[in-house]
Length: 166
Image (cartoon, rainbow, N blue to C red; front, side, top):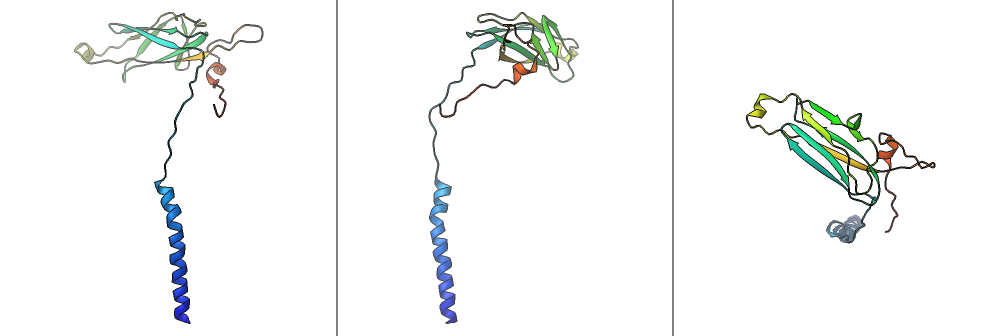
C-alpha cells in the first residue's frame, strides 16, 4: 500500500511536469514581428546651418516646414573652455531662445558662439569641438491672436497628440 502511494505520487509529479513542459517551451521559443509605422508630422522641419571661422562658430536655424515655429539652442565645448555667445537671442537657463517666430521658409538671425579662453595646445593642432543642440516647438497662439514668448515653458512641454490604432 505504501509502495502504491509512493508510485501514484511519483506518477502525479511526472505527469504535472510533463504538462508544464509544452507551455514553458512555447513561452521561451515564441516570438513575433511587427510591421508598419506611423509618420509623425509636427508641422515644421528645421535645419541647422553652421559656419566656422577660427574659434567662432556662427549658427542659424532654418524652418523648411509649412508652419511657424520657435527655436532654442544650447552650445557645449570641451572641458574648461568658456563660451561667449552673442546675437539677437535671449538666454534662459542653459538655452538661448530666438527672439521671435521663425516663419515657414524663414531663418533665424545668426548666433555667434566663440571660445574665449583658447588653450595654447589648440593652436598646435588639438581638435576643439563646439557641439550645438537645438530644438523647435510649435507656436502657441492666444485667443486674441498674440503668441506666447519663446521662453515660455509651456511651448516646450507640449506633446504631440496621438490616436491609438493609427
